[in-house]
Length: 381
Image (cartoon, rainbow, N blue to C red; front, side, top):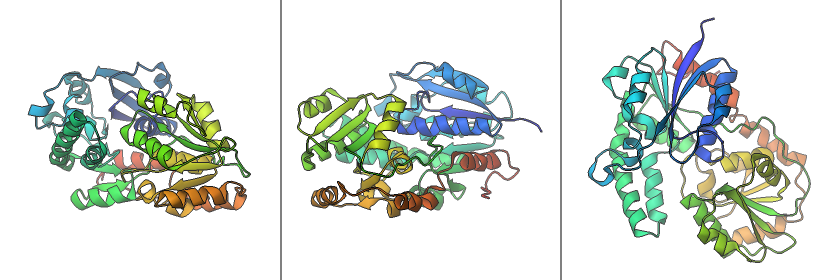
């Protein structure tokens, strides 16, 4: 059988797989490699080093510097797109007949380029980006950042129409599929890749609560601030905040705070253990964009998951989460669940709903689209 080759253009170096976007990219590449796809990876660098670990799952890898200075405020092209324009990338993408998967609107600078006109091209949308940046603007308290988020949101909304040049669009949540499909009929849903190969949630009772995520992301910083303001954990049932790159403000806020514990930059195995042994996962969110991988991982590997509606909107996972809308409701749930054993029955309830989050099945769906004679239709088994 003739080998299938696929270009993947990533907005960042997808290793280590330690935050939402690159988790999806890394485990997508891994799953595609495992079903026989030869991946030619192109990734932009801005703070992350070249990753030799990717050589095992990629046929070739090319790194490109992301521009640090870009005429952002005077250009109609969004900064996240314009800062990833590189002629070497275009030359490599146009040098062979292989299809291309662009990761996020960030990487779509050449989606409509005449040199790629005859190529099969797909875009993985990690968010509806203009809505995501609008949400950042709504929650920002810094003037300069607020201006940037507002301008970038408007530019992204205009720029989104470049997606008409994609043969296919892979949305990441049900809500975003509906939005994109109404504008670009070649859209279908593929839930995020996550790398969890077994449902390893353990029955029983844990001794702490957990919030985890990339702690340098504004929306996660806001979630931690909300938890500090509204949850008063006890010393024998603490709330652990775990994740990468917490800022000085967060570290100062949590330092010496009764009942709270910060675990900074845990390893992958340490994070898995924290998730598996926690009794309650507290996962508030303040904008409904994409599918949060912290939610998926907590449901695969953890015990009780407590969320507000924004966290689960468009995921189809609300049935296996415990919902709260107000702080008082969350406090009451903590009180009720603290000594309640997590049972095998709860684990079994999750099985059907989590069946759509299967990396190999999702990779097979991408393969059928990228190497089909009719790439505008997704053939689901």
